[in-house]
Image 1 (cartoon, helix red, strand yellow):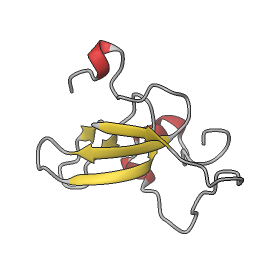
Image 2: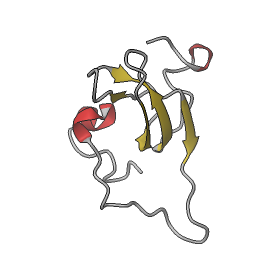
Image 3: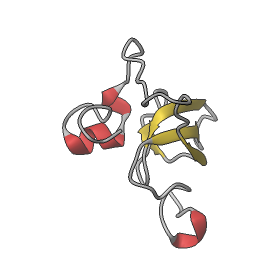
Image 4: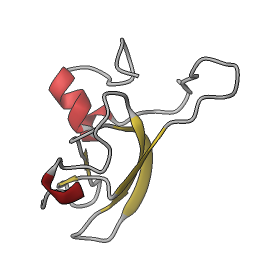
Length: 97
């Protein structure tokens, strides 16, 4: 896929922490959002099985006065996440969030 942000990276966000990403598959037009989006990392489209980079990303907002809370009841499809595949584990664990 073509580079985003004037050739500076594959994604709009270039920070070190995870962020909120909006995805749109160029092949089937399926769209989805994820709070497990990373700089220069994509997610696999469930329909087409191709890696898709987010077209929009923004920093995750922390609740005022609280540390970031992760909703562990929501399933993160690690088999579709490029970051999880690279790490060999869930990208939400450890010091990666």
